[in-house]
Image 1 (cartoon, one colour):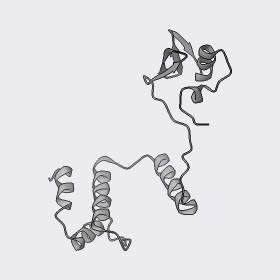
Image 2 (spheres, helix red, strand yellow; image 1 turned 135 degrees about the horizontal axis):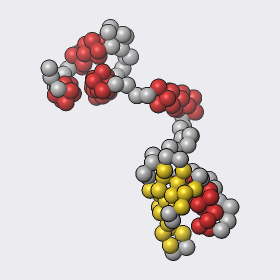
Image 3 (cartoon, one colour; image 1 turned 60 degrees about the vertical axis):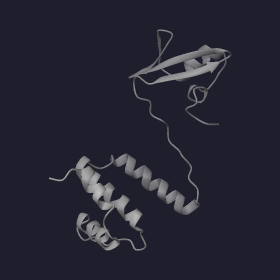
Length: 143
């Protein structure tokens, strides 16, 4: 069995006609979108090979990509929306009034100065003494 890396490397030696045939083989005879360059076809085929070998993107990621494509087609611009998800163990660092603060993301909240907090807003208030949006204070949201 040929390794996927070798399959992908072999695409570079194929003619446009061979790439089209390979695309149809991988997509079980589906019609190919016209006007694609060799480079575009090569990337599409490489994606499909990897998808077949390692699996597809999660459904929610596919929906988000579809939403972005539709928005780009309709508006000609792309607005990034949605909250960032932070994995446990991630460290957030913020420099504020000549002092550096470090926060660790936990499964069920955050740790700051050896204390647990349920939200970043509580930590931002602790640091600043004012009512700040925690995600905004730590650079996770823009204005």
